[in-house]
Structures are given as C-alpha cells and as structure tokens.
Image (cartoon, rainbow, N blue to C red; front, side, top):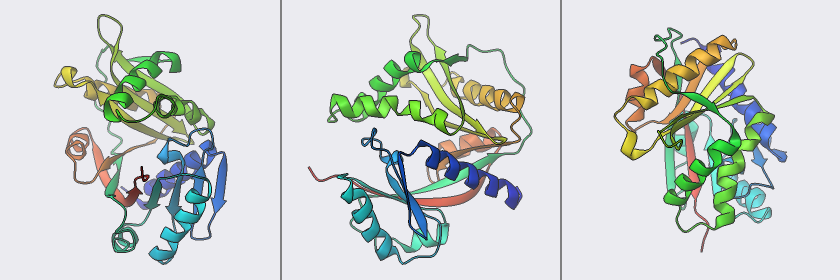
Length: 256
C-alpha cells in the first residue's frame, strides 16, 4: 500500500471531522473539533495532534479547550504512532488508552453476493441506535442517548452517506454499518451485528455491499479503522484489508 493512499485517507479524515464541527480551534500542532449541539458525542468534541508538541502541553490544552466549553470528558488523538506512544506518562490520569489501526482495502473486491442488505433512512436506523447505546451506557440520560443516536445526521456535512442494514422477518434492524464517500475515498465504519444473529455472515455481507457500492460511486480507496489488539482486525484482513498507520487515543471520563 503506497504512501499516497494513507495520505488520501488522512486528508479525508481531517476534512470529514472538520466539516461536522460547529467550531474548529486551530492549535498550530493540531486542532480541536467541537460540536455544541452534540456535547455527549466525545468523537465530535476532541483534540487531534498532527505535529510536534510536548504531550504535557497537549493535556493542558485539552483542559483549556474542552473544559472551557463546559465538557467533563477529555479525548485526545495522536495521529503519529511514536508520538502517541511516548505520551503515556503525560496522560497517566486518563483511564483509557487505545491504539487504533487504519486499514485500507487491497482493491481486489470479492464477489458480490445476493443478500438482504439495504439502504436505511435516518428514521429507520435511529431506534436501533438508541437501543444499542442504551444497552452500552445504561447510566446515561435520555438526552445523552438521543444525541449519540442522532449524531449520524452530522455525517452528510462532510461526505455522501449511506446507512446499510439487514432486517429480520419482523423488520427490526439486526445488522448495520455506515458508509461515507468523498473525493474518491470510502470509509465503512460502525459495523454492528446483534449478538443473537452473529455467525451468520451478516457482517461480511455488509462489508462486501459497502465495497461494491462505493466502487460504483467512483471510490478507488477504501478504508476502515479497528482496535489494534482486537479480533476484528484479523477478520478484516481476511476480507482484503491491510493494516497501516496507528493512532493513539486517550480518554478521561467525566467526574461524577
């Protein structure tokens, strides 16, 4: 996978993040994205480090920028692997440190199979999202859960968006994923299959549908992200994805 592919992916990610923000704070060594209407979405309220800077200064800036907007959480992303790994001590008070790998597809698309995958509207998808977020975060308020579900409405600000899903016989969404396309780059994320419907090939059907739909739309770069140490990484590799750059994400929970 050539360097040009990873550069196009990184450019897509930055444009996509900035387009969804209600405010972007330029930091010299990076930037912060803020979304005042979706404060429960940490992904939309974070600091992203792209250049050289002392990690301690980043932590202080996160307090200033995120805390200054009344946000209790802290989320900082280092786009360079070595720099992110070296920031461990400065972020020792953050409870979560994740290594996230970017994976690009080889471009050799597996055959498309006839499936029940369909495009879903926001209205069709939101009830499933609310149910899943509620299961994952039972202590969150109804308003926080609503924001986490409805933040998908922001995506169209930065890309052509298709929500793909599979329904059961009663019409309930049992598997889903989100496809974003812009400037010839396609990202497929948040592939979720309900536990009782796993091991049926639904995840594979969603990925293949996303690859073929985006290719038909003119995409020639396909990517997704995965936790570096988690099992889906190997599963995506078997579908033709190849691992690339690693970013580090540090999270600190709000005090209660």
